[in-house]
Length: 183
View (cartoon, rainbow, N blue to C red):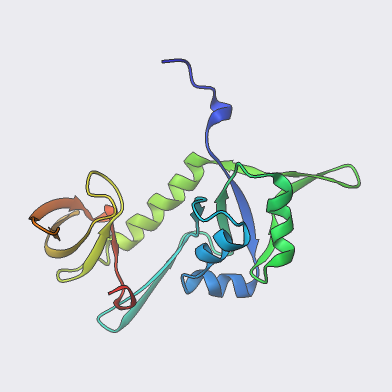
């Protein structure tokens, strides 16, 4: 295996949101909007907001208000142009070079992962017995289950597949509650 060049690490474009964009992010609609205007449905997007409703109670979390992140890799001009096409984006972070040139600024994947981890740990304290959850990491990633027990930082999650039911012990930070609207 060859030596990895750090310049090959995934980076993220940072968008500053308008107040309407912050509302859209809190409502959980911003990620889909960004994929639509960038015309890339599989592009990675991280909106550092999470809202869910459980037991008629709304929980809202955010780790970086006013910003969102989109994986780099597209033509820089596209990242700039969508700001004009969206009422939710104020600007793409950039540096001016000369009078008419802009260079798109990006952040390394490690910084976005830190934000993801902070958000996951904030949400972990909200995990309760009886809650429907989606597993966000590990071998059961993207599977949905029900929390049937709690043990410190871990949850016992009943995962039901078509022909199999399994109880898995999963760290709470690797679970994302499914709101009543997701049921």
